[in-house]
Image (cartoon, rainbow, N blue to C red; front, side, top):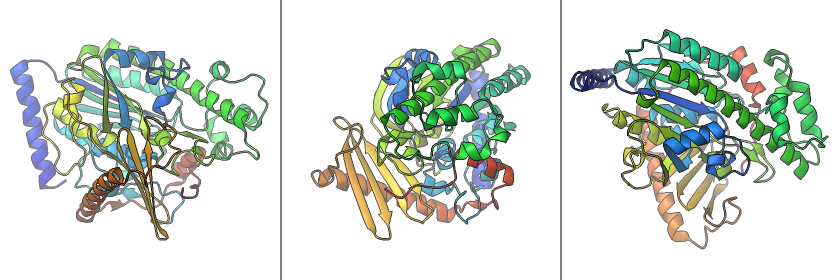
Length: 469
């Protein structure tokens, strides 16, 4: 890894040994759960009128619910890499490549991941992920003692969790990263769950797509799954309502299985010595802007506003209203665990907010590199959200006040040029810092996407990008 990693490893190990020797207690376990493609406003604890999330509501009530947490990108690969490194997408350079001619980019060896830091500090590190864009060739496996990344059902993944908990040393701290695509398209909740939130009288295209796929094994339905979210001709409100119902049913099913996973955890680990973090890498669109479905195509709020729930020792029950970014998670966790910070990360710790001690908001930055080479980026300082599109044909800027316009439909950029100037200056500084970091620590070239990964990505609908907004 180089001198910087070696020094960090030594300091981290010494810090952990000192904490254990002085206090006599094992450092807290860390359970980090990423529920891919889960938008915050679809959870009951975020005010959703449907009862989609009784278990997650309980976790929210027992710890900190962040009202304004923002993803670093609207796509799985760059957002998760930012989550696990504390770097912006422009800095780490990992991005989706299925529809481009470029090779897979892997994280530079100069940038430690959260798993590497915790492994160096004495933690057993386990990753249970759903493949797709969370793949070894991009560097997501780095630092994990165990990294299982085969796409499977959430039920089987919970069984994997049970096995790993049985095999883990109870006297050694455990970091477990649990990722699932269960709430990602195609939305295929079990039939008994599907009926909870969908109209039984609906007979449109999305019902037929659901029926055609719900009982098929994954390997038999690659092509059909990839087109699940293609808007049918004449798509109307009934189609969107049924689709949203399927999505919500999938969330309820996921919530039920996460309750089972937490029960297994409590049987093997001490829940009162566990930092339990639940979040999502990005949200999902249901026609809010230009009728688009899914994600990847823009940086609107429905794609970036994500849940962030944290329960654990020293975390009071509270609602945190300040803005935070998922890029801030690594420095926050390391400070929480009394481990040295990683040099060069762009995120900043929000530990004071987590502990209920006050503190200030971050300006949350999100970035999306397009196949065309153009850059979308956004800056969020509630209630303001600025979105910028930089293209060869020019730059487009939109500014929204989410306190009165949560759907982001009224552009106030011309009326509030003072806010625009401030947020653009911040975006320019972050872009410059990220690009400079990427120049010094270039991403690796991991070659082409494997056939298996390509099929997996196609089954998730990663077969193309919408037009730039």
